[in-house]
Image (cartoon, rainbow, N blue to C red; front, side):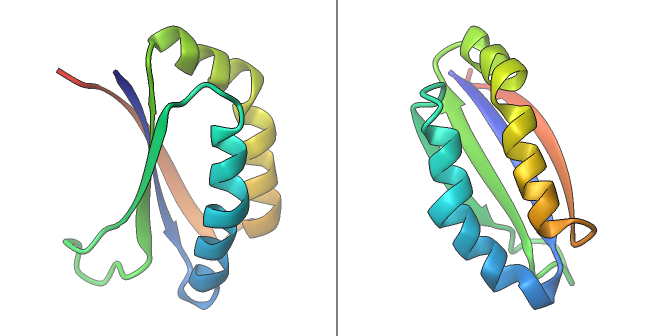
Amino acid sequence: MIVYNVTVSIEANIAEDWLKWMKEVHIPDVMGTGKFVEQNIFKLISVENEQNTYTIQYSCESIEDYNDYIANYAPKLQEEHNARYKDKFVAFRTLLKRV
């Protein structure tokens, strides 16, 4: 199992809108690609002064599914996110393998 982990810190004044949009639009769009079998969204609570940091984890069966997502779907979906929340967030991505 491969986990694509996206961590996002979002500005406080738009955090509620962002979370709603992620749950109602972006995450369903990512899952709609058919490349992932499960998703979870978590709010970080262990970092002081980071009240609006979230991690979204998408699980896929294989590295091939992940690579196909990155090549064929991620650019468009990331651009939609960037256009909507430009200069209002910081994100980084990691790839995990279940052992």
